[in-house]
Image 1 (cartoon, rainbow, N blue to C red):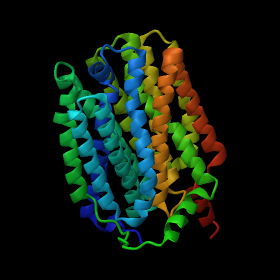
Image 2: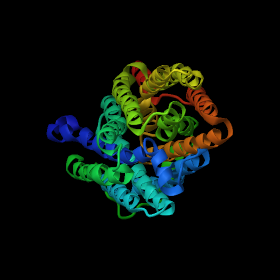
Image 3: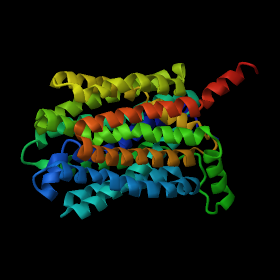
Image 4: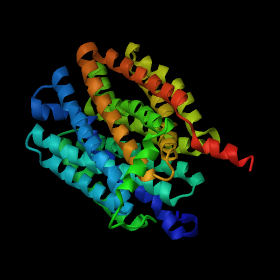
Length: 412
């Protein structure tokens, strides 16, 4: 039985903000593979070149592989263990990964601890949305999801401001991890412990094998749910582009300094945060699937034009429009997945986290290959095509269960 936080106003006041802070903490470290990518490359490989930049960018690829492997286990853990405890374990993994990256003496250790942070991120991201689906009523989930997702771009905003004012000189990326990323992670741990209620799921000492199999069947033995997962995979390749390559493209092509690149990311993530919140408010009016398909199709041409523009400000404007439009579909993509298997939301969101992480992996890997083979034009056109593929999958292969429920209720 779901809890109703409307009846617990003191808890409701802190529930969504606490999840937002936890989500926020998982994205801080991503700054070192966006704004600091060239600096990170120089630390471990010497003067940057296309091959060394692409190699360093594969930090995201390896982390994604490890996170995908762990995500399979998350599907089992979500059935077996209480969800708040899993959320706290995820935040602790983020803290460990951040400390390890700060201390990393070489690229191998950097890969190991960056992957540990990735494991923590997939736990936090999965449990945040499972707890929303478990604790909040249907008509409040999309708005709550929009705020939680906004935690990711808000992390980018905060990181960009901090980098621009404090870390664009001699302090560098290691000091950024120690003095900013780590304290934020500790705050997230406290917020999750005190602000998130214990879920209604009972802790089960013994779980029959049939419970796991039933959850897997509910997720994979229908066309819409797996198609939704695949659509989210293609959609999140675009997040791989913005995390790894977007700022680096402007630094490489237009010669932006680290501070200016931080300002670019600041504007980008500000629009992304606003779009996430606005998109969450639109979901109940427009519908999850319709919002995803229409806006994704409209957004793609704006990115497609970027490599053919020689003016910095026009290229920035096109990029901003694209990511603002894309951000309007954030809440819709998560909620479409969440509602596909209402009786197995833990398993569904664990699988969704796997496919989202696979999207980041594919985005980083494909982007690196395209950069080496075809330069920045090849990179951006590739991601434009992936955007349209995602829209086609949503349109032809998925359904919005909530629309079906509303239509059914009209005849009852």
